[in-house]
Each structure stands twice: as structure tokens, then as C-alpha cells.
Length: 355
Image (tube, rainbow, N blue to C red; front, side, top):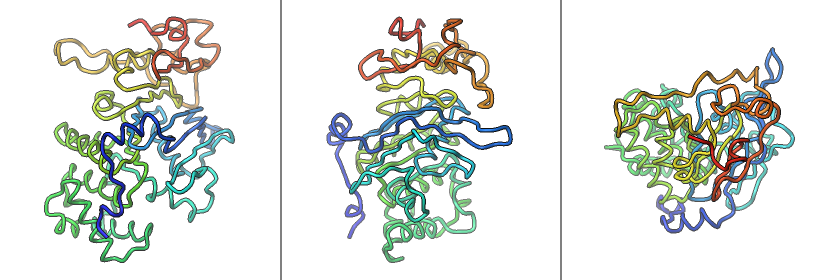
């Protein structure tokens, strides 16, 4: 059996049809995650809802502290033991053979399907994810044997092939090396190879390009696009950089203080942002056509989860804040375009936020 036997290759045309017509690979509804602390329950994710289709890349974007990583870890039940999931939360995942409720998986054995099996994760800093005293190859082999029960020889064969596919030179030699012997870009590629070796249906990429220089960032982004076409998986791509999302994602969900405030096709959201937070993130990007133009950061700081503002959580920093309305009740998601939604009173009234 070759590596292509374990994968499910797909063309870009097939991926496009799946994006528009297939059942969701994962459906998340009203995800609310809180943490028990000495100060009481702290809400990290508040009613997040989204879906990802096979062959689709969903970008999840927002500042540090927005709840992106907590959301990602929730899909694999990797949040700390003091985490609490709201009873109304639902995460339905299609394993290929059945649809499972992720929150119903209580035993470690049952959770293996979503922990490195049908769902894999690429972490932001692979140096902290690889065991420093174990070779890259042995870690890849151990994972494959854990999830598939295949022989060590076959696991090594697949691991070397995956290292080859992600563009690591001399993969047979690199297989026996340690993480510290790899450059930053090669470590990230090795992490991607390890995540893909189990042929996951869903890949979670948690800021995979943040620690890399721009040249390596571009290579990793191109690699992930190729892998989506080849393996026909869904990807949740998490970042704070809308520029990266514009190059990578099909759709985008913008998150602020645990709430998703805008969703839609990536080009539509970037060209006609409906929420003032999305507009602020875009204004903070450098303008290559006017290098002398000053950067315009989003005013103020993101509040502490311990002191969540009433009403719209963004109203304390919002340039179009409506007193007595935005701080009184949480705005509902409204349609502002073709498959484009925003949770904003101004967007609901005017169908767009004034620039």
C-alpha cells in the first residue's frame, strides 16, 4: 500500500463543488467555553457558531485574547481541566463513517478519533511541540502506530514519504534528526508532515506562520493550499493577520472577546467589511501603495474576560458606538450581503458600516 492508498486525493474542481454543496465536515453551534478560576467563571468563547466543508479553508481571525486558540482546542477537547462547556454547545463532526457529537466523547480512548486521528493540529511554535530528546522520525512513527496499529517499518515509510511531500530535503536523513537540528521553516514543515501522516479530515492550523519570516510564510501558505487540493481536507486557519487570511482562506470568521462578530466569503469581507472591528483590523495593515501613510491601530485595548462589557463587546472601542443601544443588548447576526453576516446595530440599520 502506498501513501496515496491512505489519502483521499481530490482535484481543486472537486473541492470547489464540495464547498458549495456538501454537508459540513464540522458544524459548531453556540460554542461557549468558560474556565473556573479563583475569581469565578471566566468566559473565553461566547456562543460561537461556524461550519467547515470538505476542501474548504475557514480563516478565524482576531487579536490576541479573542478566544481563537480556545475555540481550536475545543474541537479536540484539549482545553485545560478547569474548562466548562455550556450545555447548549454542539460540535458535530463527520468522521467519514459516522457523525459524532464531540462533546459526548468522555473517555480518552473515544477521543483518539479527534486527537491526531481524523482531526490534526499544527501549533504556532513547533519547537515547543516536538519532544526535544526524541527524533522527529520516531515521534511520527509513534503517532502513526498509536492511531493505526501499522508496523514500525510501514510507519517509517509513510513518515519519510510525508517529509518528502512537504519539501524537506534529504528526508531519510532528516527522519533521524532532532527538532533543534531543523531550521524554523523546516520544523514547521515537519509539524505539517506529522499532522498529515494520519490522513486527517480536518486540519487545525493555529497561527502556523507567525514565527516565520515572510519568505518561509509564503512557502508554508502555498504548501497548505496544495495539500487542501491533494488531500481534500478542511482547514481551520487561525491568525491575527488578515493579509495572510486573504491569501489562504475561502471564508473568514472575525472573533472579538470570544464572540464571532462577522463572517463571510473572504474577498467580500475584506472589500466591504460590515463590522467596525473588521474595518479596524484592515486599517491597521500597511498600505503598499502609500508607504508613507501611518498605520491606524484599533483604538484602545481588548478588555479582560473578567470584565466583559455589556451589550456589544466591542462598544468600548467602537468609532460608531450608539449610546443606549450598543451597550444595552447584544446585537444579533444580520445578513449584509451574499453569505455575509455581521453582529452590529449599525450594519443592521445601514447594511454596511461607514468607513
